[in-house]
Length: 199
Image 1 (cartoon, rainbow, N blue to C red):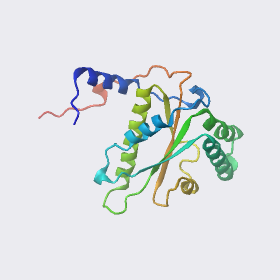
Image 2 (image 1 turned 90 degrees about the vertical axis):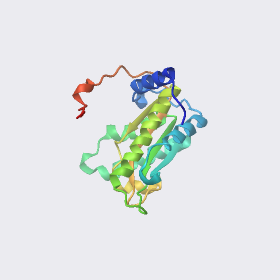
Image 3 (image 1 turned 30 degrees about the vertical axis):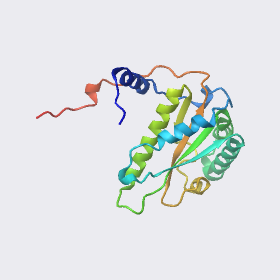
Image 4 (image 1 turned 45 degrees about the vertical axis):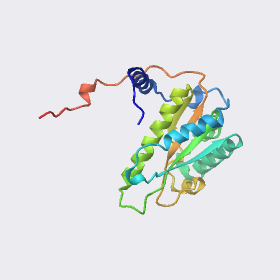
């Protein structure tokens, strides 16, 4: 275990507080992030805690022409499934927003079947992996955004990302260079969210 000194722990505390969602419209359109940096984002994601060492995450990375493939798939599936709720604006955004990013990472949860582990714990492990992704892009000074909109919860979308019936698609992580930084954020006082039991 690497010991933390006061300066490194203070740096990490600031990193956590400065993490922000940076939406695709805030990216420098199409400016590429180095694949080596994306590999580090994914490596850090894979060091997330997980029950039983199951590592239930599965990631599919889209970049270059792959972004067009992703955009086409999600917009056409939305058009097919939306029915009376179809909105042209939503369809257009599904076609155009992916092209603003450098990389899009589809976030999959592969269901653990060999151990008696509740499904929620596999989902929680993947969520921890995504937090590691968020912190990594923040440390590198690039933007990241986890979206669960669009086709995330369509069962028909799973196979496109290599997921089976028992697996789950948990959204998409957009990465790009920041053109417009996100603003300041606030949180409720700790006292409103924490109860101490001392005796």
